[in-house]
Structure formats: structure tokens, C-alpha cells
Image 1 (tube, rainbow, N blue to C red):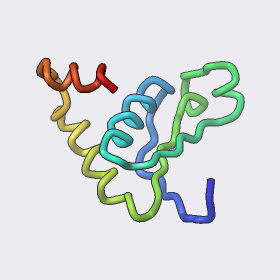
Image 2: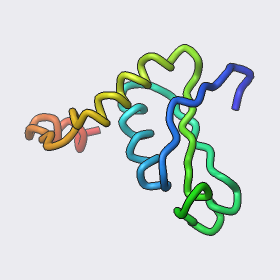
Image 3: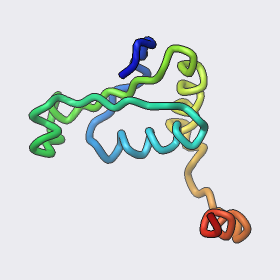
Length: 93
């Protein structure tokens, strides 16, 4: 990490959940650092405290990150569908 300060915004259980949340935040332009215990990461352990993954963001992105997390936990991202124009734009790049 750089010299800027990173703030813990959430702790989730398992790498998959952490990757989902990181993707949602990065899609909003928020940089995310994921931190997991060394042994848990090396052996893909998702049980108990070893499976915990911390999500940290730069200080200037904390409010935006918390808004994304609140929307996710409220279910705002469920049942979302892309229209064909959005899919085509992504494949053209």
C-alpha cells in the first residue's frame, strides 16, 4: 500500500464474498484493498475467524464505499439486468 491511510469499511466471511464487494466498489471508482490472514489465504480456509476478509478503502473514499455496501446489503443490486446496449459496449472494448 502507499503512504495514504486506508480505513476498514467491512469484514466479510470468505474470499468469494469479498471479491463480490470489491467488484461493486471498484465499479464505482473506489480502490479496495483486501486483507486476509496469511494461512487462510494460502490454504483457502473459509471457516471461523480464519475465513474473515477485511475490506479497506482510502480515507477519501470511505463515505462512497459505505453507500455501496449499504445498497448491497439492502438488496439494491439483486435482480439487475443489463440491457443489450450495455453488453455490446463492454464487448466492443
